[in-house]
Length: 281
Image 1 (spheres, rainbow, N blue to C red):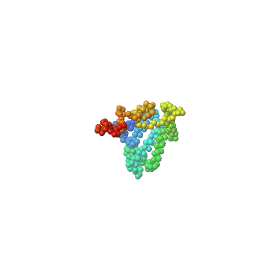
Image 2 (image 1 turned 90 degrees about the vertical axis):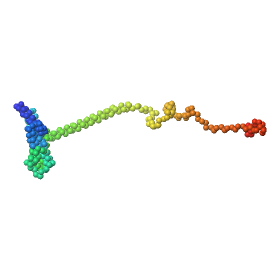
Image 3 (image 1 turned 60 degrees about the horizontal axis):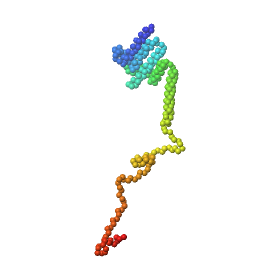
Image 4 (image 1 turned 120 degrees about the vertical axis):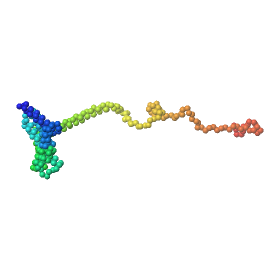
């Protein structure tokens, strides 16, 4: 019995994979082409959904016999696919030509292998005729909510409480991580502060200590002034006037007046060689 179940599960899984690959690849032969054509005509753009459901059923059958949980999830997947096919058909008709009157037969043939396929067109035409746009939207939302409850396998209230608790836990973890990071930064800053204080020179706090004034920017001194400042222990002194080296400055005193040569009188006028008047004494 178990071996037969496993063989059936393997065949079902293989058929589901074959149907899924035939939708996207041409390497499945004529049977794959026919399978893909039928799937597209029936489900349109959601044709991959039924193929994946067959694969899932085969895997669950290989693990064990189907139970109520498998049937419940199968119903949930079916509701999701039906709601998606109806929504895709309505979107297709809105984008192309919105009909004045909805007919299930006409809608089933209108989309072809696009949108929700034949199933989506048939259901969309029936719901739009019976419930209108508003009722169809509410029915689709209710179907999605019921499908979620069937797939999640727990009440909506419990699922919401679990989701909110996880969100709160994530928020607490984020706040704790930020607090740890801030504590690490504060510890690092506190450990770096004493090192910075030790690197600074110790200040002399004696009674005669005064804070050093900022030095003014002065132009560089000349060579003579620098040498004199170094010789006097850093104090500046005036440099003596230049002597000019071996050059002798000319005298600025007025030149002496030339002395007049003594005049002698002629021999006949008096004694020889007597100086003239005004030259005696």
